[in-house]
Image (cartoon, rainbow, N blue to C red):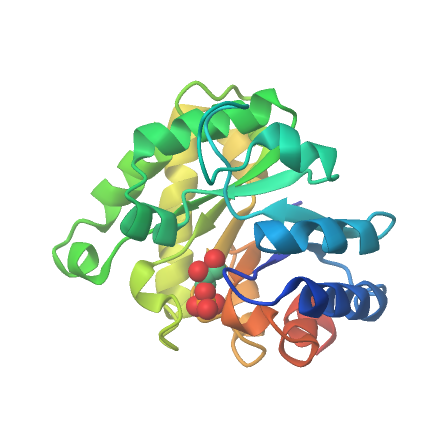
Length: 251
Ligand code: 13P
């Protein structure tokens, strides 16, 4: 039985005061809902949000971290610093990190292994571009991203990994993958996990869908067998839009 897991990736939005306000509202409003909930604020918004959410049911994640623990890496943030603030989770391999900041599977894998070694849970993002999908490369891209991203990860460590399938063409575009397309991509990802680990790990791994998830489509997506959660961007930035997603089962 996989517990539904709804996460909000705030990206480079919300100032520290706006983030704290939303975090307080969310902690109250989502109390009675069944899904596991996470928010990922920007680095400067994390301290305030982590403080507000420290005794709540909401998990605080970072959107990225460096692949080293400290040193001369101007502008970067380490797992040690995040943990000091009470951050327990980190999103890695987001398509914006891959496409805009040139992160490749090797670097992402290094970060995954470091986060796990530091006791953090990981939300590993994967997904194809439109060009790759139209060129018939969906399975190849997903296989490479999952296999390379999880290199060196043990079966035991897989309990601390969530995968987020985010087709790049559906992010921030208003175009959601159809629930059927998303479910079939998720089923394929689960089959890769089975090959890399075993059937039990594949059945237990939470796979979130991300890409224009909103209150109006979350129920349909979550009804699919292989969709276990959502990684939400734009619609996670206000209580009004995020609450019905987190509490999709009460809609
Ligand atoms: P949108 O929900 O804005 O499409 O963003 C999805 C995403 O990239 C979450 O990480």
